[in-house]
Image (cartoon, rainbow, N blue to C red; front, top):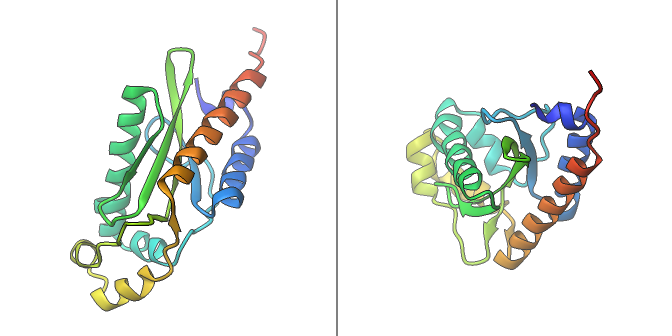
Length: 171
């Protein structure tokens, strides 16, 4: 079963937009392989698009963070809020239809109040000049851990509502 079997793409995009409006975080719905199902992006800061614009940034920071945290969320069947290697928050809510894992909702692009972007690591992994990384890091907003966890609960509840609205197609 695919996410778009449960709700149209537009409904999942509404969820992405809602998460962004509530939190300022970049939100995406992902299929079981970790691919975004919609083309839209709502960057939370100016550093993330700079990282993703490099092949190394996407391959060595963003993709592994999503895959590792999504795997934790899938195994635990619970929301996981962690930091990516760059020092920013990655929140993942798994989506299950019964026992079947069908995707995940992810939100990212902020740092915890006591967190810091690791400019040295970002520089080494992406070849973006360290002073550029530090300058772009100033655009990364902060969020309290409690607010990130509350956002996770809100996403869980909304996904449950979307699944509850699902009506299987008659054969």
